[in-house]
Image 1: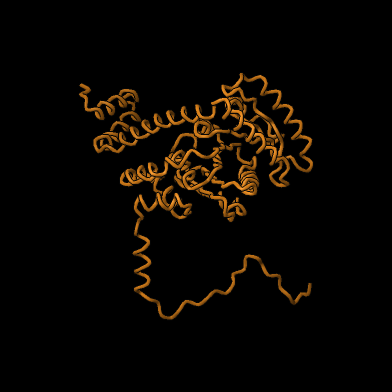
Image 2: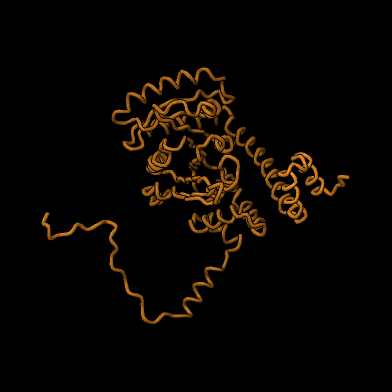
Length: 365
């Protein structure tokens, strides 16, 4: 390369288009006005049923909103979509950070769209306990799948929900199904607590592992493995193939020590490489076999019924919690009781009883 030529960086800024000298003020006001116009519940439902991505995204945003004023409209949208839901297979995918969940989901999702499937990916992003913010970077990690016209990726912040599962993921599934997505992939945070919640909203639970990771998560391994319908050893490529094969044998032996599942399904262990795409088709074959077996035995639909009951109870608990903390008298007394507990002037249990009695309108004296 000649020393007179300078290497051009891929990050170099290109010359843009100069803005016009005259800007239409009326056009700006019109754009701002249109942005503020919110579609009605009927318009959102109609858009979702016609697979309009904008309507689906706005519907999910409405469902995820914590604004009490949005609750009635969100419930109306869910009710309108419900008759068109429950026509998909829901797959939960979990694994510790670094196992390659995003890369695997992109490869697996692309494989499924190649089979003619419409795939929705609901990725739950962990929120900071300090700033309460989330990066929501799943779309950037799935840059090929996000451009696929048969795929829809929706990252959501976990918020303060236990284990990191977005509070409204269950309702989001309904909207995605109504929009025509027949395969729903739900990615968990992978910190050990969110798995139980995700397991209660999916049909098939897939656990991603990597060989040679050690037993740092020994305390949660048994619980997650008992929930798993399949264990996939990812990154089985290059020099790691031999280790992955050995890990497959070890997990197979471990699974036989667990009690039989209610579904009578025997969990499978397999290896794959999300980079080379090796083993991806076998994973889908395993899921298809599970779906066929559990449908024939009736377990699939019984599990869906149990999940609906579970989420009804969870919603009641959630609404009671929100209602409690939004009561003006509770808000005014909460800080006072908190300081009394911190200063050892009142026990945590007595303080809780005082607040609950206030909430239920009882006299504590």
